[in-house]
Length: 269
Ligand SMILES: NC(=O)c1ccc[n+]([C@@H]2O[C@H](COP(=O)([O-])OP(=O)(O)OC[C@H]3O[C@@H](n4cnc5c(N)ncnc54)[C@H](O)[C@@H]3O)[C@@H](O)[C@H]2O)c1
Image 1 (cartoon, rainbow, N blue to C red):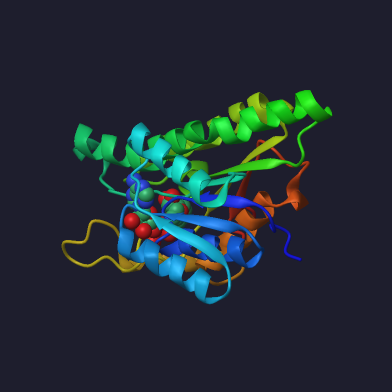
Image 2 (cartoon, protein in one colour; image 1 turned 45 degrees about the vertical axis):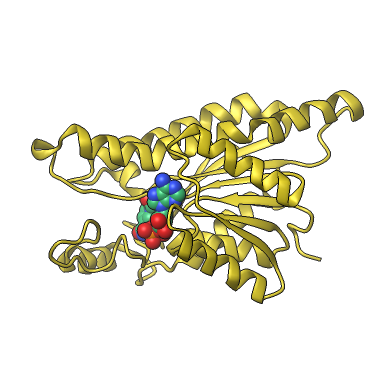
């Protein structure tokens, strides 16, 4: 028995990095997973890894910046697996620029990718999270089980980070909407929480090469290692473990919180 047997999850941005590790972890706990990524090939690879381990998964290339694609993502999840219980909003990216050089294009792209994707994917899921719970409450006096929404913030939003006005605008907003939605959806047995990863080894934090859109300078990687109490950079699985907890009934009495997953950056963050 897995703790997510009979649950269906959508994980956005699950072709790589933290999202891939999360999709694999949820599947190993028993969930059927819709592996969403704007890049279909890595999404199909993630789904293939899950199926090869005996799990259930399909890839999906919706870009939930657009509401109609978010609706298609949810509709296809329902068509394939018959229900939707867990939405993991993991899609995100960076385009760092010191504030004086920021422009609308960079601001909009980063806010859309980190915030609007989460807004739309969660909104599109409401008929299957909120409305289904509402009719269960009318029929049985309570929802059959808790449904879950998880957002992906960042330690950058907790501490601030030079060059990330656009990114921290979006990641800070995700902390705020986690609290708002937790209050709004709590009566329907829907838990809404967030993770705030610290420094996790993915392409976002790889050593930056000339011409790369993401990545960070080598000296920042060394600095990150120095301020992490546990003395190592995070792995995608470190975040996936916490997200899987938030997706499971083990966290049924936890809502509205953002959990830093940072290895104790600067002591406690
Ligand atoms: N790596 C870190 O240290 C770190 C720290 C804090 C927060 N985060 C957050 O964790 C999440 C995952 O980051 P990661 O490091 O695994 O990055 P990553 O680049 O390895 O993976 C992100 C995936 O999201 C996909 N994606 C981008 N835009 C999308 C969209 N509009 N719709 C669907 N998929 C989309 C990308 O194609 C990519 O496969 C992001 O929200 C990121 O901001 C990461």
